[in-house]
Length: 282
Ligand code: MF3
Ligand code: CO
Image (cartoon, rainbow, N blue to C red; front, side):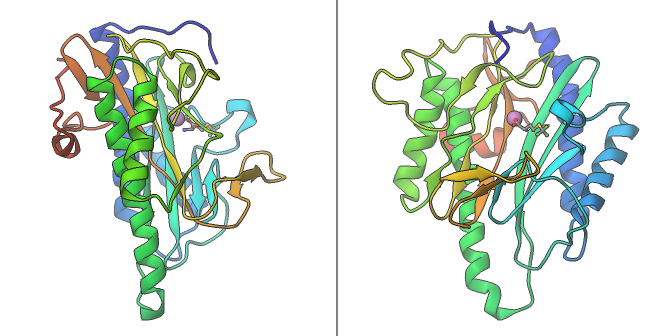
């Protein structure tokens, strides 16, 4: 990644929150408008409009020549699906990974939704996909909470791993993609693993210190986590074709605690269940 960890001041965190909340605005616009029959290219257009209105630009577009504003990952696609003319179908599970740069600071977060269906025959599949999304989201919140109580970056992945093992041992955690630091660039040190690193492989992870801003982004699968990249050099799919899911938040750690930058309440609503109260950055 990008070398040394970039520690931010409270003022810099507040500046980065602007970018993170623009990404939240994209998520809100997508939640309101995504429906069966819409193409993922249309979803990309919605993101482009929100970015433009906010005076921001996408940090994905052009990143290693990535050709779109957001990533849309459907069903067996784990991450980095490229928006195109494919129409969303009833029962699809789709993650919307979105980013923004504003004033030199980066935002990056992702949510997943399952599209409704009128067909009773889809009910079982939809329930399984909704459970996959709920467990992935809650695993993310467990990881975020660990950023508040943990001592090292590795405590985040351990909390994600423990949450999944305790609540849904049938689901797999994708090992090949990680969370990351974020700031004046999108991907910075440290890597944030989504699992408990055992043994000597990784050594000790960095200490969790005030000034860190991390993207915590678990990816889970309903089958095996083994995956490959398609010929477009981006789209990551499960080898067994099983469903995948991805959630991501961008979290600041400061002297008084943590604040989820892409949430207007700092994550208070969801963190309550984990006994964590976010601390405002002013
Ligand atoms: N949110 C993605 C990540 O952290 C960033 C995707 S960059 C793109 O991995 F170029 F693939 F879009
Ligand atoms: Co990310």
